[in-house]
Amino acid sequence: MIEYTLHGPVSQERSRIRVMSALRENRFPQAVLIDGPAGIGKKALAMEIAKALQCTDPNMRPCGHCFGCRMAEDSGSTEKWVVPMESDEAHARSSDDVAPGSKAKTIEDFKKAYIEEIQKNPYRVDIFSAGAFISVDLIRAMTSAFAMKGDRVRTVIVSDADRMNESAANAFLKTLEDVPADTYFILTTSSREKILQTIRSRCLALHLLPLSDNEVRGEVLKFAGEDFDESALTDDIVGLAEGSPGKALYYAENGKGWLDLSVDFLQKSLKGDYTGLFLQLKETTLEDPYMANRFLEVLSFLLADLLREQAGATLRMPETAHKVDMAQFPRIDATALELSLVTVQETMSRIESRRITPMMCLQTLSLKIFEGYK
Ligand SMILES: [Zn+2]
Image 1: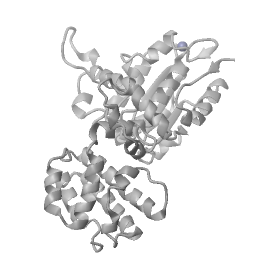
Image 2 (image 1 turned 90 degrees about the horizontal axis):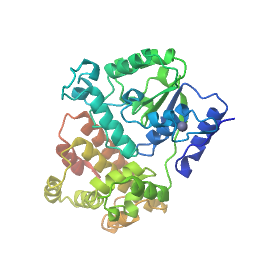
Image 3 (image 1 turned 90 degrees about the vertical axis):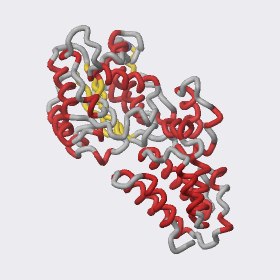
Image 4 (image 1 turned 60 degrees about the vertical axis):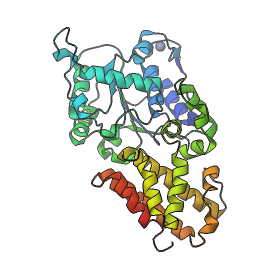
């Protein structure tokens, strides 16, 4: 019998055991959907599974050195991936259509760059831009690669499968209805509900769990580049990441000032120091809608911690939460905090709709939050 050993963090062992026994018993499904919060390593697991499926070692898979294993790790094998792209990238010409010697970037070139990024650090949450999506052309390019006959096992990883637009999802569904022999699809998503029910029902669901705080720390340091500032990975940042190395890395790199800013945002809003707050916001990078919403996640987290404090529960960002001087605001009770969380959530939806600038939304939020309790 062939033995399978997939590697990964201990907290996610249960999912791997399920996969390994299905592989061992030769009943691995042709389509799997890995879901779980952003940045916890779904793509890392997908890559491990792809390698195990493609490996040809007679005893132990993945062996890491056979042709199948090497192909699975080759970023040039772009047909093994479907990734969201910006529309100009997805509309670039295919290498088959470009004249020999042309320097024009092809769709495969763009894709290869994304695959390299993923392989360098599969936890990263900012590899794809907010507007990137999976178009029907990307799905068709993938299925036409099937037409080329091969006798090897083929795997396709569909990263961020929820980013398929409607026509892409329908085209993909057709592929799933009649999966060619020896072909396996591994989809990943952090928004399972955004995927067509008909696609979901054809995939085995693998729900991946977040990591422990210690594992988050370990994985961030393992994958972060040499110029990563370790001191930015504070206990509060790890707490904020909720088991996601990708989020911890993102906040350590981009949100250094955000924890303190969230404290100031609350205190200045409560005191009515709007001018001071608006000036402070102007100095930030929150003009960008994606960043503005990541900051609001931090703010929500702080509010949730203040709620935990009132309930006597353990805090996730104790150092930051203790900077808010709640004694100054005796009217802020649990109800006020719960309402404020809803207000922040509404603001995030407004920013996402992109009808109003993030700065305007943040200013309105500072006026509206704790309305009636100030
Ligand atoms: Zn191998």
